Amino acid sequence: MSWLRKLYTLSGMLAGVFLMLICLLIVAQILARQFGSMIPSTDEFAAYCMAASGFLALPYALMRGAHIRVELLFRILPRRCLFAVEVLGNIVGLVIAAYLAWYCALFVLESYQFKEVSSGLLPIPMWLPQLPMVLGTAILVIAMTERLVLVCMGRRFEDETPGVMSE
Image (cartoon, rainbow, N blue to C red):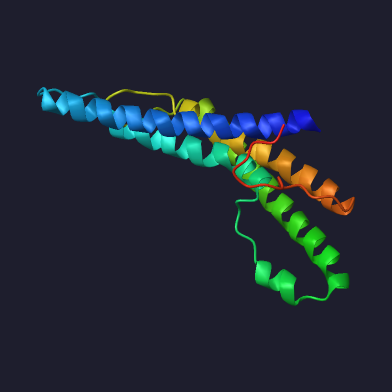
């Protein structure tokens, strides 16, 4: 399933691009203020980029093992219970991710249908900055499903070496 790993990595890279956009927007606004000007809606665009970055980073963080887990629980449980707890935890995580993806999609669809626009200086259709939210949660559902399948097969989902890109 290496194409899925590439999808999660692409999602993480997009999250990084949105973080860089935040930096560029802030620097541009600072420079504009130094010259007595301003760039309209920079705060708004930075907020959109932050939300996009957060949601798009979810599947990549799962692949890299960066989500918070209660490791202490795994250390005190008997070995024969670990598999059941791991599978149950994955099912709960998958259900939460699917619920989130479903309602994010409905939220974006509603914004599109009602032609919502931002309230800032630039009227931006709200479904555009909300779209990465749906994309990130949908990819998270795929990642959680893959994780559940691999755990059931007795294999590890997370990359072995944090911080090192796997081929």
